Amino acid sequence: MNVVEPRTATLYAALVGNPNCGKTALFNQLTGSRQKVANYAGVTVERKEGRFVTPQGRPVRLLDLPGAYSLTATSPDETVTRAICLGEHPREGRPELLICVVDATNLRLHLRFVLEVRQLGQPMILVMNMMDEAERRGIVIDVKGLSYELGVTVIPAVSVRKGGAHGVLDALDAPLPSAPPPLPEGTDLHAEVRRILAVYVTDRSRESVVLADRLDHWFLHPVIGPLILLTVLFTMFQTVFSWAQPLMDALQALADGLGAAVRATLPDGLLRSLLVDGIIAGAGTVIVYLPQILILFLWILALEESGYLPRAAFLLDRIMAAAGLSGRSFIPLLSSFACAIPGIMATRTIQHPRDRLVTILVAPLMTCSARLPVYTLLISAFIPKRHVLGVFGLQGLVLFGLYAFAIVSGLIVARLMTRGVAAAEHPLLLELPAYRLPVPRNLALGLWQRATIFLSRVGTIIVTLNVLLWALSSFPPPPAGAAGAAIDWSLAGRIGHWMLPVFAPIGFNWQICVSLIPGMAAREVAVSALATVYALGETGDAAVDKLTPLLSAQWSLGTALSLLVWYVFAPQCLSTLAVIRRETGTWKWVAVTAGYLFALAYGAALITYQGTRFLGGG
Image (cartoon, rainbow, N blue to C red; front, side, top):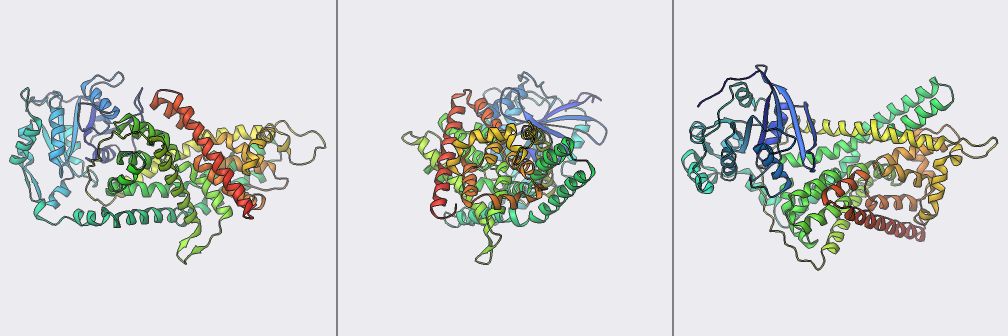
C-alpha cells in the first residue's frame, strides 16, 4: 500500500459509522475529557470535537460525526456526515483521515456503509469494534484478508475496555495511508457485502446459546417485558431519594456553613445581603439537588450503555401507536427526561413530518431534570418521609407518580393532535445492540459532563438571575417607619402582587408569582428564587436551610400540590422554545406550544387546588 510521509502538523480526522457501532465510546477512549460538545452551525445536530496527542507526539483533532446508515442522506444527521466527508460543509474542512467504525458482530449491516465510505476516495482506516463480543459469539474474522480485500488498514478494537484503542493510536502515528481503490461503477453493494462475508467471516454464533437470546426472551416478552420496565423505572425514582439524601445533607451543611460564616464576618448592609441572601441562598439551594440529578443520569447512562433502551423502545411501540405515533418517537421523548432540548433535537431521526412535529410539541411535557429540584423541595416539605407496605418510600412513590402523570398526559395530548390523521410512518425497525455491562469510565465521564453543565448553569444563569432578583427584591427600600418586611415595598414585591389576581385562584401567593418569572429562563431557578424571596422576606434571621420548614408552615397542601401540577405542564424554559423555533422554522408552533402548555398548567392547577380545598386540604 502506498503511503505519504507523516507530518508534524495536527492531523484532522473524523469518526464515521452506523449508530450503535461503539463510535462514541471510541471517541471517549481517545479524547477522554478533552472534548467539547456544541451544535453544527445552522442545524441542531450535535457536534463533538476532541483533541489529543498520540504516544509518539502527533497532535490530533478528532470529530465524532453523527451516526449514519448511508451517505445518501435522509435526515439532518446524515446530511451533516455526508457534507463533512465530501468536504462540502461550509465551516468544516474535509478530514484528512476517515476512521470508519463497525460492529464486528453485525458486519452484514455495517460493511455496506464501509463500502460507501470507501467510494469517496479518501484516506481511511477501518476499526473493527466489539471484537471481544464477536469472539464470544463464535464469529471468526480474517482481519488480514479483509484488509487486503478492502485496500485499507483493519484494526481490531474493544472501545469499552481500557487500552482497547491502542491499535487506533498506532495507526494514527503511522504515515497517512493513500486512498483505497474504488469499486467498479455500478457494483451492487449488497451483493459485494455478501461475497466478502462468505470469504472472510465464519459465523458460528447460531450454533451456540447466546446470553442475549435468553435475556431478550424475558425483556421483550409482551407481558413480562413491560413489568420489568416498570420495575426498573420505579426503582430508579426510589433511589433518586434514598441514595442522594446523605450527599444532599452534606452539601446543605456546606452551604449553611458558608452562609453563616459570611453573615458573621461582614457587617449588616447591602454587601452582606447580596452575598448571603442573593448568591449563597440562591445558588446554594440549587446545588443541593445535584446528587439527585446525577443519580437520575447515572440510571439513564447505565441503561443506555447496557443495550436496554432500544429494547424499551420496542416494548413501547404499541403504546406509542395508541398515541398516534411510532416507536421512533420513544427515544426523543426519553431524551426529554434529561432535557427537552436534546429530546427535540433527536426528533430529526423521524422522517415523517407529522410524527416529527407532534413529537416536538409533546416533548416539553416529559419531566426534564430541571424540574427535579422543584419536585424534591415540595415533596420534602409536604409528603411525610415514611414507607408504604414497609418497603416503598412514600416520597419516591409521589415522584414516580409525577413522572407517570407527565407521560400519560403527553400520550393523551399526542393522541388528540393526531386524531383523524392517518399515520404515515413506517413500522418500527430497530437494531438491538449486544448486552454489555456499563463501563465505569464512560459512566464517570458522562456524569462529569452533566455535573459540569449543571454547575456552569449555577455559575452563570442561576447566579445572574438571583442577583437580579435580589436587586428587584431589595430596591426601592421601604420608607421610614414602614411596617412589615422590606421586600413588600420592593419592585419584586409589587410585581408579585400585580400577578396575584391571575394566580390566586390556583392557590399561588405573591412569592410564587415572583419565582415564576426567572423560572422561565431555567426551571431550577424557581427554587433559588423562592429561597431569595423568603430569605429577604423573613423579619428574623431565617436562612436558606429553613426554606423547607418555611414552606410547610406557610403554604397549604393545596398550594403545594397545585404548584407540583403546574410544573408538570408549565411552558418550558425560553431555551426550549427557541429550539422549537429553530426546528420548525416558524414562531407559529412556538406560540402553539406555549399556549397549550399554559392552558393545561393553569387548568390542572385550578382543579388540583380547588379540589384539595373541597376535600379539606386548604
